[in-house]
Length: 282
Image 1 (cartoon, rainbow, N blue to C red):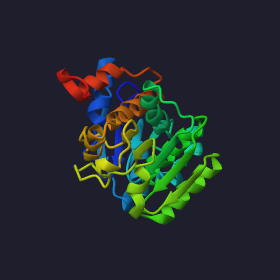
Image 2 (cartoon, rainbow, N blue to C red; image 1 turned 90 degrees about the vertical axis):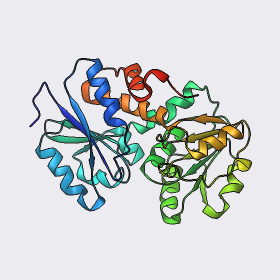
Image 3 (cartoon, rainbow, N blue to C red; image 1 turned 30 degrees about the vertical axis):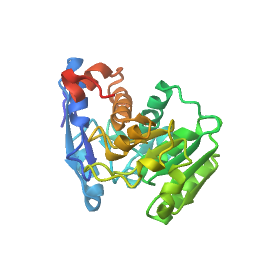
């Protein structure tokens, strides 16, 4: 059991060894003089239920959830915050005296970098690639913005794309799905392109060529390692504005930190832990 003074947190997912959350959150605890610890815990889908019960039994103070568990974990939690209900996905869990409460901080994490760039959402055409848990948070965040013209979802699994579309329609968005084979056609006419898949995590080649990225559009890759994915490199070459995955990582992580501790996260310390003396990339 974790003592009241020294608490343990973790991130669960599969894969999870790439996660920068441990270094980021441990640096935040250290900056505020807290002796808490945060580690990564690989959980295959077949072990999710048993793993959640194990975390509960050892008195885990809280944990983050990443691919592929953000939706499937819903049924193993005791309560859901409105962010999780609205999004139908969970990326942060707090243990409140034995009750596991699910939250979604990806909502804030996704939209904050766009606010910082003062993006005007009026009339904007959005393309979301992917239909997993992060895509649900992205769709939900977009539903709060006035004037979004259209949201297109492209995903290899058409059935998963349809579920995400239904989610978006319930939120009042004008959205529809298109065939993955026609990806380039729609990237060329999109104002905001969002990669909500894990493609790029192993530095894979992006399915989008730079010739099919509109200049002055915005290209947002939620993959944060490597910092410059192949998609973002091509977006830079196409003179598009790029949004890095680490920006979403830090913003959602800061929200999770506040949920767990009640304290504002030391964001500068979190950034320094990720980038050291060299500072943020541009």
